[in-house]
Image (tube, rainbow, N blue to C red; front, side):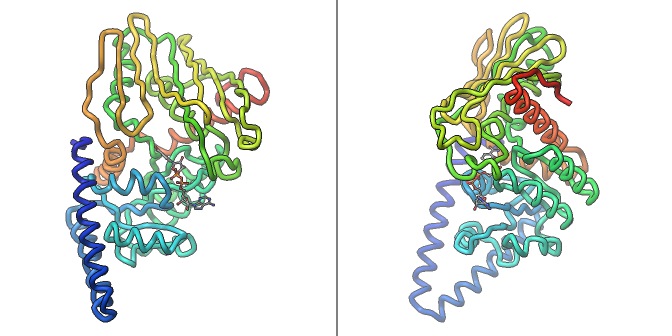
Length: 384
Ligand code: NAD
């Protein structure tokens, strides 16, 4: 069971460990010769750690792209996983490589850059490559990882075109490797409850879904359409699409969409700032959705014949809250990312499918494309 209190414990423990490690290293650095011995010992220690993890039958994960999500969530979560561990990294920054090597005990032989990445095929420590790069780079690194004989987790949104998603699925199939999308919410008990209440029709047939996801501001590659593939719909709206799909257990038939007003035309010259869209599902169910880079909002709500149920906040890493027409939901917080990565490692070991496969990501990108087409044409667009 992964709890927040565990997560705090780990953080404190790691801090103390990092502190003692860094102080020890600084003392050694006073004497050049001793410092070299220190490096050799540390390398040996990292290799031993890797061997120990392997001997516990854990699968080795290499994170590709050491930005905010890798450093803030995935790497810390990999200290709480039972079936996998942080075995390697792929980064374009020698400084980051050095920092991560120390912080996470990663041996030199498991550190790659974007140029020598393909040689990861010869490294038995790495079983899974986790692609955590800007969206436009997901397809290339997923395909290269599959060709290097590795299983792949790719972050959401899966890629920026349907064709790219199809090539990713095909490359992993051809290599006989599994592909999963970083849909962490499938492993959170509050979202599992939304799936149960909706799909089992605990409050009768669903009539309406409402799903909103917005934050106030964004920056960097997310504003550059070549790298992001689009605005908040790609980044945040994908959670609303997912939420509507798994709460109803159904696939949307058609969509309509409207772009919101741009309050900052310069910042959002490439991408939408806000978008509202509607999805038609079978059985007359509709979903009203909205996402935005200039309005904080976080909701997944289902209205059914005999009651309602909702999460708010809903798409966050922690601190989720749920209510139904009968009262509060009450689940213990979990480490979503640790559960997600453990489930994938376990699926590989048990030779069973992942509940969040590449095909699921592909379907979301098809829906996203239909929504953009509806926004641009002002027409109802059927989802293929
Ligand atoms: P980030 O900007 O913090 O990190 C991006 C990383 O990619 C950086 O290390 C950067 O150096 C590297 N990079 C390599 N080539 C680059 C280039 N040409 N331009 C810009 N950066 C380049 O981004 P992030 O928030 O870590 O997001 C990475 C991916 O993870 C995205 O696909 C995002 O949607 C996804 N993500 C998922 C979640 C989730 O909850 N599942 C949360 C955050 C991000």
